[in-house]
Image 1 (tube, rainbow, N blue to C red):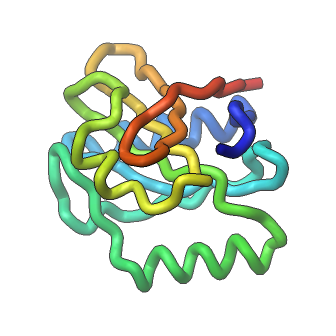
Image 2: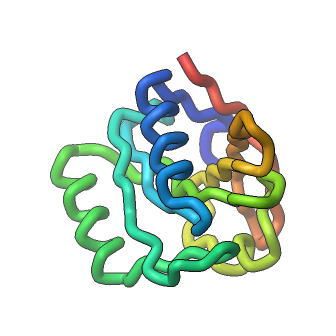
Length: 135
């Protein structure tokens, strides 16, 4: 497992929340990148499935973002997505489709008036909550 925490600047946290809110009622998704578990870039993606409870981004679009991340000298640290109507807990679908054990899963629940954000490590289709520091 990678480091048990992820650090996000307040400004980047707000960008993620704004992105998720703007995509409602559909799930939003994106990637966070940086170095040493400190996020320095947010990559908003378009949910091609336009679904209330799933997200999909083509491999080609994801690979293009990965190329940009690596060209910046950063690493993929996490994949985020929203749960517009449910809690910020990985669904079975989330667990089955999470592609990389060393990339954190960040879920933003918009179920209540104030968004709730959680961060997880996914190992063998099981999830473990990790510390998300917002400063």
